[in-house]
Image 1: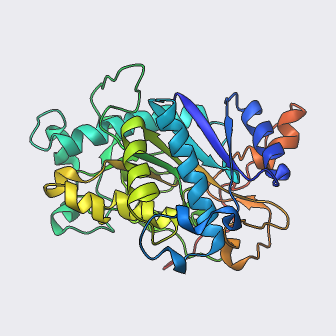
Image 2 (image 1 turned 90 degrees about the vertical axis):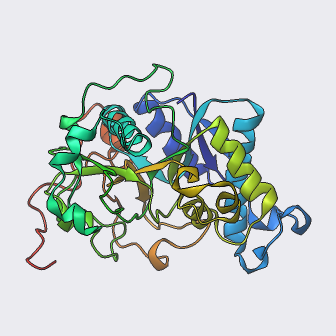
Length: 349
């Protein structure tokens, strides 16, 4: 990505300290966009629609995301990754992103060239459950079966995407027909199924029972929620700024982004002509970025899981950077917070 932006309320110096150190240890160059308190957003600057039902925290979060998009548009940045300041990632994030790029490129070719022979031979590998349209089947194309794909060095993730939703707290698997999932099997950075849930009190993700252990799946975004980490292009930044900064606002930004990606927001419905007009939003399960739940975890938007977190942790991340900050600073071996064999899932879970 050309730039990485982090949204951070100036008053949350604790999060800035943590984020800056994590980025430095990961050799990631980040720039901050000041977060916004909802009370500081004037009523007259809000777009039309029923925004009065929104909580102040949601309004402040919306404005911070709009400021990030505005910066991208004003500086004519080609691609940018936007992170919230409580985001965390695995020590091996760069390697993970390289693998994701291959899968994302293959997915774009599969979805945009359904009649092409480029990937048609691979569709024979999709199991019979595809024909039933079962969203909970494990039907997919294996990343190892993809042909050698080429993309410009300036755009390793492909040229057809609008959003790469890399950090979230839940998504639904799309129907596997036509070929809409790329599976990364035997990924040692993926925790075992018993650990795959977005919050200590949440149910296990569907992927935990649909795919073999240590599988990561790249697919078109489907009811994805939480804007922990997502990448945009110059074109999609302009569209999002128009849609939610000017055209209308009636829900929290992450819900709005979900509906935009799913093609059900008004502006998208008006512009699209059949499925081809739906934004190309690509996500991954488990996500590559996750919420970090520190001691006394508190959110400036809303409480994590009702505002109470019993354990310091980062879901989905085995070698969490923020969980290992002290070890990384001192050059010690990192600790796997979700080791294999711990808390095995029972039958029927």
